[in-house]
Image 1: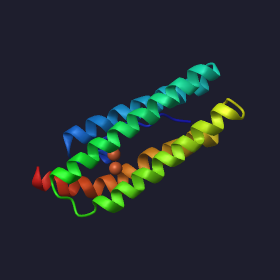
Image 2: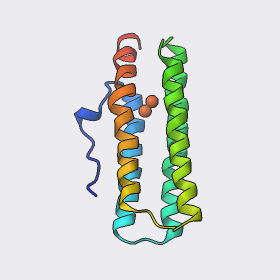
Image 3: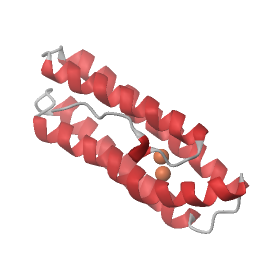
Image 4: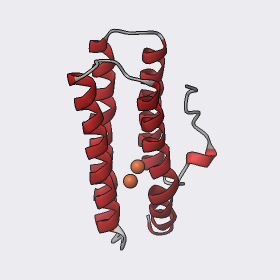
Length: 133
Ligand SMILES: [Fe+2]
Ligand SMILES: [Fe+2]
């Protein structure tokens, strides 16, 4: 699996959110490398926990900005965040309990999980925030 390369295409034109997204992309890439290099299950679980925890924090950050700047789509966006966290936690459970390895399909899932939300819901949020912040 290739790394996610940060670039203009992922920018939502709001620096403080882009900074978070860049951080999440970095952790994803660390995880991807850890899988390719055959790191131990404990290490993989630790990196995945870092990614999930950082994402939960990042979602609170976005939700605070939505509140502060009166974003109309807040409820829908929060619902998507909830689903994304649920998906990641299910994957975490699966990895901890079952095979203790992260398969290619899990990495592909996480890649979509990370980028599709940025490219759709976050992009709409960015278009709004960059007007009002
Ligand atoms: Fe985001
Ligand atoms: Fe978001």
